[in-house]
Image (cartoon, rainbow over all chains, first blue to last red; front, side):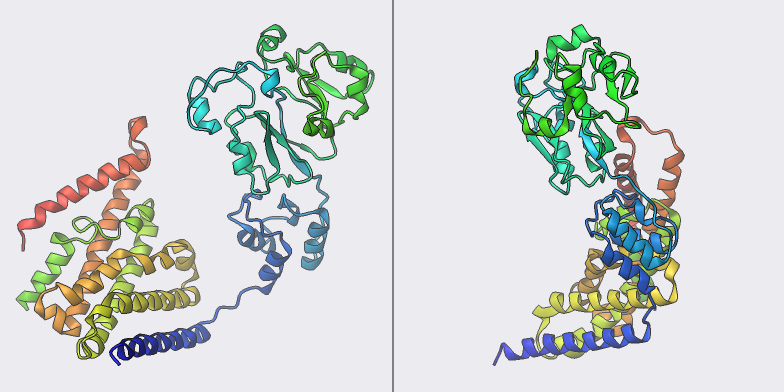
Length: 275
Length: 196
């Protein structure tokens, strides 16, 4: 019997307060624009923050208020964008899907490394003389970007971060996480990239990494009249206005294999291969 | 009458909830970046704390003490505070959407604000007899405690707004200098300790 009173007291009190809250909620009900709820339901609900809003709910509010366009959501597929635009009766914007690219091909067999016993995190490692890698600009491979990716699109393989393009939605969380600023956003349709980001001279790079871009310009010559590649100091980059085709890799015969097709790169097909 | 003056000054200055009891430090640091959010939060806390003190004191005296269920105090008070915050939230959303938006996450956080629970529990347990046994005593004590909280929050937010413009050594920037300032403010409030 002793236990009955306390249980009854707390139970009745809880029910009583619950009823009061229910009544007040009915009386003070606020009309919320139902379009916001609808748009939120049509969004992927990843809450990745890639759109610049606090989350999907906030973004939906922004879209309905006209402060953002549906295409501003990096995770939405083009069909989603069209569906939301149609629902709200606004013109759908075309958007090119962007994916992350880690501009480094220096995995363990290809690079010079020194011992590092610290915290297994790129941002911590950078504080110790820039990280335990011969190349000051290369991927440290502790996976800070992979941790930041809510979609599991980044894999650390042989001490190198590689992006699974089909999983990447372009939320740019990894871009902010990388202390070396290695990750850039590139159009998903582009397949051929230069996997190097070091602005050092070719000879300096080659001492610490077998797969560095030495700016020999073979790829530039192989692209002929077409403006596929851009020269940037001692680096060559793909021109994403006019992305190079996969066939350029074979035609150019890159001596360090820094120029790669992304599907082959992710398979590790170039592993340790320098000609 | 004299007794209530002592309670008032004691709760606001001498036994300030934030600066001498270290309760409710989370909103104290979280909402004090700008004066206007600090004012909003102070208003919400004053409202919730006064109401919570009143309601919980009535429940304590009419329900828990006669039935000898004092050991349920903490449990019951948490339920009461949570419901009150919920009520305030629903009403604010309707009555003052702007304040509701600017308070954001901190309004639900009042539910777990230990200053509010602290005030209510102290009311029932260790406050002077006049506070424990009467509903108006408890209400005044809760209201004054909340005023003390508001005073600390507003003083601190004014200091932090000044700090934004001040030249602070790099190592101290941000949270570090805020915590140092809070410490100095708490020490300043120690000066009131002989007052009551």
